Amino acid sequence: MSPPDHYVTTVFGDMADGDQMIFTIYEDEGGRYATIDGGGAVQAALGKPALQLRFRQCAVVPAAPAKAAVTPPAKGVTPPADAAALPGPAQLAAAPAFARPYHKALGKLAKEQDWLLALEGPAPDSRGVTVDGREYLVLQSCKAHDCAENNIMLFWSADKALVYGKVRAGGKSTMIGSPPPAVAKEIGNAWWTQWGKPQAE
Image (cartoon, rainbow, N blue to C red; front, side, top):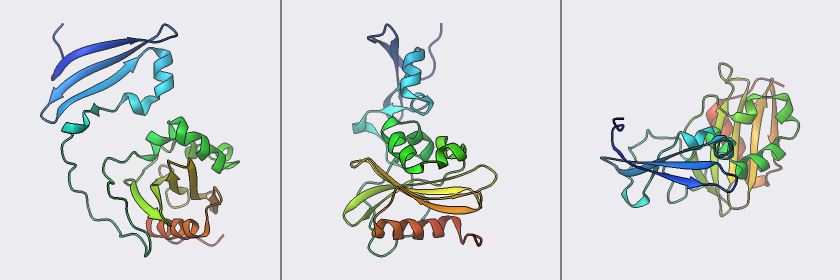
């Protein structure tokens, strides 16, 4: 068969359970990159978002295109040095390292609001901030076709495996994860900036 555009080679890895992980290597103007696929067990373990990504060699990643200006963080909150190529909420929702503390923070909301689990609705770009010396990834998402009354603002600390946030669901706002006062304040400010003034509860 004719190989696809930019194809270089394919590498197969045998897993302990007899399944295979498949790495297909390509090369384009940005350098070499790999896509990952595999049998059912591999696909289930990695999740759909990972199977759709291109994994490039770090040394040859092209410069990220300039993004539109965003609202600067509140006083006392500074962005980390490198905020490029940040994962989105749907991508993280499929990763166990994020999903476990996130579901714990959601509590009963995880059962009451299905859209909160996959976070596949409209989502502004992720960004990084530092509050009281700790770095957070700021994630935002909402329920498709109903963003005004069903939305979420999350602060994710990867090194501490902590998820804090504010959920607006069914006309009611709830703070999740018991954030420290300084973080709660910045979550509130960020939520207000992104989603606007809520209706009276």
